[in-house]
Length: 312
Image (tube, rainbow, N blue to C red; front, side):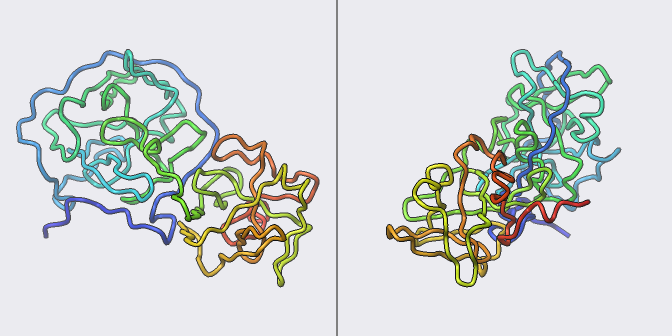
C-alpha cells in the first residue's frame, strides 16, 4: 500500500509531537576521521520515497535506508530524515573543513553514523550537498554539506527528535546540513510559548520559547496562587510573563494559568505555581537555579518539582 511521502511530525500536544522534545546530557569524547568523497551519480532520478516500500535498515540505525527525505518538526521547522523518517543529527564536535567526525568508540553506540548508497533517492535534499567520509572503523559515513550525519539510539520511531540539544552539542539537521534549531523562531509579540524538554538528570522539565528552564519557589502558594518573590527577589528570578496568547508544546494547557502581580504584570502559572527564570542560566538546558536557598526548584511540565521525578 502506498504511503505518504512526507512525515509531518505532529505538533503541540506531546513529546513525540510538535518539537521540542529536547535533551541535555553528557557530551562524548572526540577523535578524528576524514577523506571526503562526493556522491556518485544516482542510477535513479531524485524524487519521492514511499516509506512503506523502502527496504528495512540492515544492522540497526547504522544500516542503509536507501534515501533521504524531509519532515516538519514543529518549531524546528524542516529537518532531514532517512527514508523511514528517522531524524538525522549533526555534532558540534565535528568539523566541516575538512569533514571530520569527532564521535568514536562509545559515542557511536549512542550516535550511530548515518550511511547511504550512491543510488539513493533524495527528496528535499540537494544531491550536490551529499558526500561521504571513510571512518577508521570502515564505515562510509554520510555528510551533508561536509557535516557528518548521525542517528540517535534513543529515537525509536519516525518523528522522534529526542537527540535535539543533548549535551548542548547534538542537533537535528536541516536539509542543508545546518542546525535546524538555528531557524527556531522565538515567541511573537503578545505570545508566550512554554515547552517540555528532556534535560538530564531531571527528565522532562518546563522551559520557555528559548529553551530556558522554568522554576518554582517554595515560598509561593497554590490554591490560591500567590507569588511571594518581591522586587529584590525578581532581580534574580524574573517572572515568566503570561501574554494573551499562550502556546504550549508537550504541556497540558489545562494546567496553565496566570496571576496578576501588584505592578499589573501577568505572571504565568503551571499547576498553580508561579513560574520564573534564573539570571545565572545563560543557555538552554542550564539548571543552575536548582536547589538555590533550598527553596528554588526546576519545574516539571505539571508544575511539580522535577527533582521529585528523578529515578532513584
